[in-house]
Length: 143
Length: 433
Image (cartoon, rainbow over all chains, first blue to last red; front, side):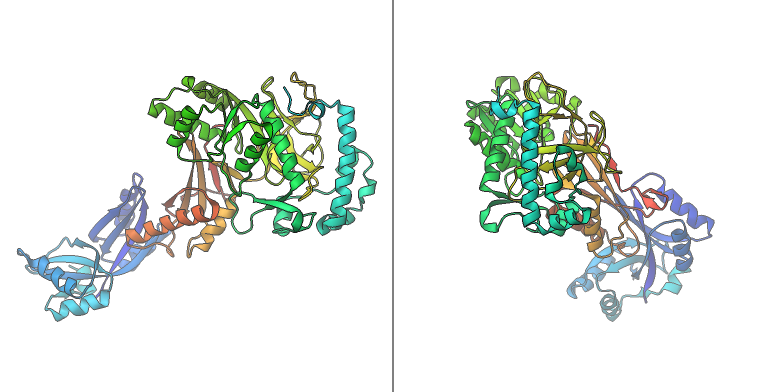
């Protein structure tokens, strides 16, 4: 039920994002979703790609610090209040969202949002128990 | 003007005869009371009685900061603790600082040498001395304080920090002599300008600046901005504290080292051999009157040269030139001594931090700044911003807690710190002194 995300440490200096996308592009890796968190000195680029292991190894070869993290891809009904319902369920179980970002593609009629929780397993259990649909890695990488 | 005319102007033959007598006495004392010296003298095959001239000093082994650390805390003391009335320790050392102890007589000598230094700088009994050196384990504050009292001046023990209050007191109390680090003097000048205070309206006439390296260009700037004569003072806690050597206001050319209490030598830091007069090298000092912790041929690691030619002020004591650097990698940041290895050991102590680091020292608006660059590898990397920010904060806090220096920790990409021949460049000092 979990999805693998890679995160890459980047200093705030020109050309770093371009460099990463060039490396991935030349290795035939497709970026499916991304989010960039930044401070004044550094940033963390988080990616969902179609080939996690390959992406990790080519970036490491080029000297980047890369980590793999488990995140959860949740189907969110594409209507007013769709996200609100999901967040309320999580909140009632005191599960915190560390960060989240939207996935580019839709799944059926629903939007897909990638979540990083403080307690991933409990989040999955809570959400599935409340009838929320979660996408697995296989499905997501090939969407 | 002199504080102790007889000794400050002692003709050289008499001065050297006094030095030899005092040297022989201190060698007997340390040989009898300090096992470290007995061992090192024996290993070098020399007994105190073998020293028959000042030239024989060269046959004695050196003492280093490491020897002091190895003898932590009191191993090099030459008197019982009952006779020690004060203990100071070197600033900013992690783990084991270097500890020095003073007998009542040591405090007395120090006070006199600081009083002599004040007079040499042009200060006198009628002055109001604004002492902005830090009070505490650091020798600066109390050293200058006791000297000012010995002189009979009025001393304001304001210590460092709270610049606005310093300026107010300077205005209201009529401070006429300022003692602090040269960079703090410039910082005060900026603050004063922001507050609309003109130094021409103050009574300050002399500033005595030390505890960190500075330059002639900085002197010009300080004199212009603070409207005073800026005098360079030298000292180190191991030897005594401030007042080991000072410029005279008449010449402002070289710092007279009080040779009736200290014997200076200049050596080649690599070979350990003395260099010719006037040549640059490492300053080595032997204390010949100290009781608490006499040091024989102590390697200061400060680079200077020495001149014996007579000075227009009439003092016969030799002059050392402005310190031009260090023979080791010690950095002096806002008056605090730091070795890169100390920062390295703090970084290693923080879980997961690989010691690929770079220290960038700069001077921004007259204050020293330290940036610690740390490479982020997989062990410390996280996908969450807050975890990395917490790590940076922790590095800053540990360096502040253990070394007393405020720094900025910057996380950088792996391999962004240059390595040369497999060894990383650890320090970039951008300060233009």
